Image 1 (cartoon, rainbow, N blue to C red):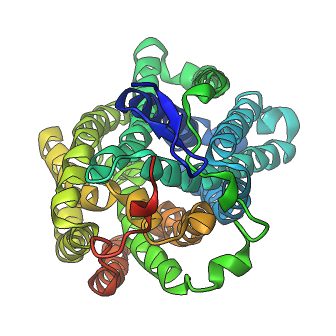
Image 2: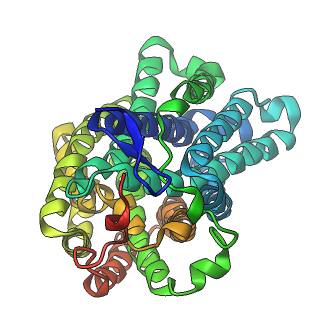
Length: 436
């Protein structure tokens, strides 16, 4: 069978071999993108003093976490821009452009002067670099979710689309492994002086390699769908308000829980549980490996029971168990216990993450799919995922850290209500109209 042949719609009819290559190519870009994004969170413990040198350690971390949150605030803008671009010009071009932009942001951060060298210009440039990364990530998520959902074959979309989060977690895992390797070869003084810069340089180089994969990303949208109205806000808000609210309601709890048990957890294990940075990194590395393996398993489950049921299970368990898990974790003494508790939180979250992009894409028609997914996700993620660290650290500084546990629970309860009333896409799925 040929790798691709015209199917009559203007889109290529793919063989299984070509489809697999396209998924790998799209996943590679996603992995690179998320490595670049997460390496900031994992190196913040080392470089915060270089940009905010006169503050207390906790205040320094809060400042760098605030800039981390600003990156999330750029996501809705990136989601709008690249979503519009993907719906009008194609998924492939939007994905490549967003990854290259992410690499540019990483390179900028890697070359930044310190506060001692440039004064207030240093944190300002850090903010600009993070804004570029946030803008890029906002675009990558919507286009990658759309592309992975459209390129996947009917009946196994949950399995194949789960590789968006396999590579998202993979990027986070690679970032963790890079930091772990640097910790083994460099003393802490060297990590603070220049070691953290190495991680950003590696991300910039990785982003540049995405150009090598671009020809394997078969376009999933056809020319006839790229009308003048495609990717416009007017077209999006015409008949898709319910889908937008559903995506935002589920993303709120899903993203908040995800960032609580991943990026913030690195700091939680150090600042609250009292573990060393090296032990926290080892625990999170082990957890992320298992979490990554869970994604296709949960994706396959959604192919059997439906996306809505996956969402109900995630939101219901998160509402019931977030407080007990975090309270037990705060008192954990042994690393193995901390590992099991963090893994419990992320196992619950995997019912959401495995099909995070897919269930969103299934709610929108082709001509506004990338825009709808990227914009709705970007807004909810900025409000709840991107602020998770700052909210948690603010409660901690005020002496009421346990309030954060209840905050996460309340948002997950909102997601549960959303899941209970959301559309069951097994009955009417826009992706079934594709003939790739």
